[in-house]
Amino acid sequence: MTLFSKIIRREIPAKIIHEDEHCLAFHDIAPQAPQHVLVIPKKEIRSMAEARPEDQALLGHLMLTASKLARDMGVDEEGYRIVVNTNRAAGQTVFHLHLHLLAGRDLNWPPG
Image (cartoon, rainbow, N blue to C red; front, side, top):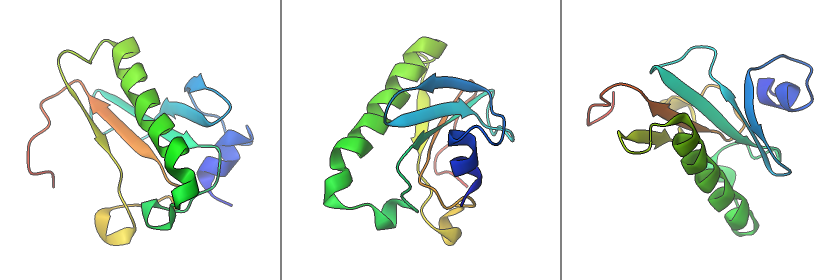
C-alpha cells in the first residue's frame, strides 16, 4: 500500500483540488514550482512501465484532467509542464503512477 492509496482512502490528509470516479488531484507537499499538483489514478498502477493496453482510456483521462486543472489554475496560457517519472532512475519515489503538473515559473529544458 502506497502513500497515495492512503490519500485516496482519506487515511492521510491532502489538499485535494479535484476528484472524480477515476482520479484524484492534490497539491504536492514538497512543491518544485509555485504551482505543483499531482494527478493520480484511483486504480493502482505501479508506474508507466506497468500500464497495460486496457489502461489507455484512464491514461488519457489523467492527461485531460491535468489540462483542465491547468486552465482552472489560470496557468494554461503562460505554460505548464506535465511530468511522469517512471521508476527510480527517473526520480519516481512513490510507486503509484502519478502526473506532476508544474507551473508558475520558467521550466528550463532539459530538465535535471
